[in-house]
Image 1 (cartoon, one colour):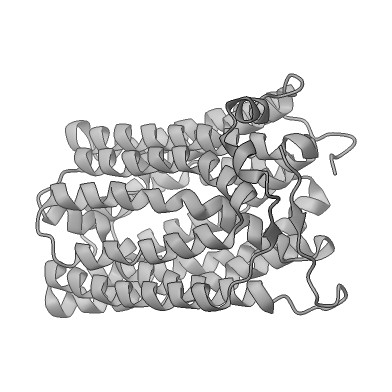
Image 2 (cartoon, helix red, strand yellow):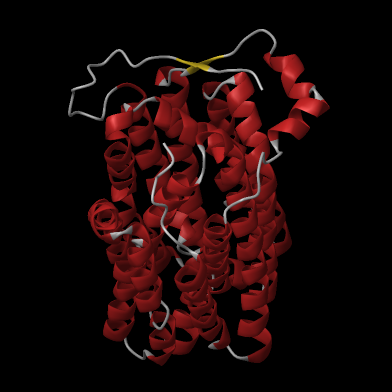
Length: 414
């Protein structure tokens, strides 16, 4: 595979200010786009069912979208490394404008499902976005910079569900959701225009990039692993896939359970979701705890404490009880993913990280998709509490692998 030449950041390496250049552009565009997405993402499950869909077809729709994301991730990684990051990010930014615009006018759940699956092709730019962020932050500040970017980009999500709930309360679920989709399309356009005008490429490619990329033997060599994967690394990825399965089994069904079984109103659920988004700030102290006390220990504690929360959710019968349980889910579960990514990097040689990342994303995406389908079937056909019990069982199995097979390396890979 050809060697990529990264463009050096002209800013001083000693600067404490992360938000300049590409990082400022991504933070602004992500915040604007995230706000628009937050207006509708909370209500997709309710809207889909209102159009005539069922929990099973909802699970099939989200699973298909997840599977397409799995396919797009390695392809997007190749494109980002061979053709650059900016071009594909700009194209998918404008591609994403069409879907909320179409959601605002369709009135059939089948069309909604089809559009959602087609929209998932936009995930092809995710590897380019991740690579561009890493390229744009100096190595000694990379962890803090990424965490800070995620926090800043997520802040608008705190208020977006409340505005979406207000639109639904005043215009009804169908018309309120469609109106929110129109606002989302507008924010997607503004976000795409910011990326188009201000984002800078961080990778220059050689003239041979195209021929290498299209060479089947090169692609085959890229996906080969030069030696067997360590047991700890395989067990670590398996535990993450189980956690992804657990979250897939319940993710789309929290709001359906809260509205149809517990009886919460839209604004009550919006308040819960908004407060839930505040938990993103815990990623920064979570990283510090992992570095200080050990990533594996933090992961085990996080999953063990998070596992029973969904059972408590099924036992909740009031707004206050649901609020406490959902906040517990965030406080206990937010530490797992950053610790996993760091430990996976510690266990993976630099020359294998791209392929390991692709394998990790593929395996966890497929398990998440299967969880979505199984969760929808259990919710609709057997008992709406069963997906939440399945979450607990899958998380406990993940803890078993973490405890029995995963070990932190004595010497970390650099």
